[in-house]
Image (cartoon, rainbow, N blue to C red):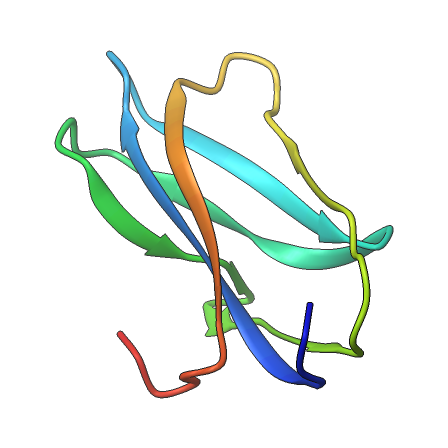
Length: 88
């Protein structure tokens, strides 16, 4: 990360033969989850309690991890951090 700020996490994903979900952590802290039921690729925001998740990051390296619950069928193609907090 080059610039300190607030960021939203987006995943490009799709359901792969059934609904799917993935949980995201950033530096060991929860950064929401994303889910899909449609089989076409789409941009999915991470949310918690149906609200967009915003992570505050300082310059430097950060660790993002994805964890799929058992039986989840979510395929993920890309992960993006965006400082455009109004994007949908």
